[in-house]
Image (cartoon, rainbow, N blue to C red):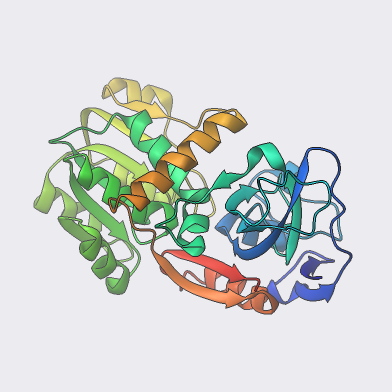
Length: 321
C-alpha cells in the first residue's frame, strides 16, 4: 500500500509517499480502507521536530496521522462480518493515518450517519469533539457575547456555528480579511482581522465586553482577547497557532473573577461520544464542517506547507483513494 513516511524531522518535503507493507491486524482490530485522512496543525509541528510537547515526537521512521475515515475492509479475515463495508471514522492511536489502510481498535469505530459524506465526517472527528467539548465546558448560553479566535480554522469555524445556535452573539477574530469574511458567512455578528493593529479596541467598540473567549492562537492575541473579558467571564484555550500557549496568570484571572477553563483528560468513550454528537449535529443540518482544501496522499508535503504558512481556510484533508 501507499503511505507517507517521515524519515527525518524537518521541512514539509521530508514527507515522502512510499510503498510499505499492509497493516497486519491483531485480535480486536479491524482494517479500514482509508478514503480521507485528517491533518492537524500540531502534526506540522511534530514533522518539523518542534512538537508542543516533546513526548509527542515519534520514533522515526514514522507515518503521521491520528484520524481517518473510510470503509471497513471486507478482505480482513478477522473482522466482524457485521462491520465489513461500513463507512466509519476512527482514530489510529496517534500515528499511521497518512496511508491507504490502517489497522485500528474495532471498538473505536464510529459509524457515519447516512446523510453525511465521509469527508465531512473526518473533518468532524477531532475538531467536532473539541468544539462541542469546549462549548459545554464554557456553558455558553443565549445572550452571551462569545469571541472565537482562529474563527476560520477547523475548530474555530465550528465554534462560531455552535455558539450562534446556542443563542450567543459571536465575535470572530481571524487573520486577514478573507478569513473574516468566511466567519461572517458562518454566522458571526462581528468579524475582525487580528493581524491588523488595534483589533481588540475595534471589538471593544463594536461588541463591548465579552463573556467567553475561545483561544485558538495563544501568545499576544490571547492576551489581548483576555483583556476584553467582562468580570465573571470564561477563558477557554484550545490551540497555540502562534507557537505559544496563552500566558494568563491565575491571580490575574482571580482578581477579575474570570474562570480559566483548561483541557481535561477524557476517556476514549467520552471522546467518541463527543464525536458522535458532532456527527449528529451535522446530519441534522445544524453544523457544517468547513473543508477548505484537500490534497492527494502523495502531496502531503504541500498540505503541511499550506498549513504552516497559515494559508488555509477551515479543515485540510488528505485524499487516500
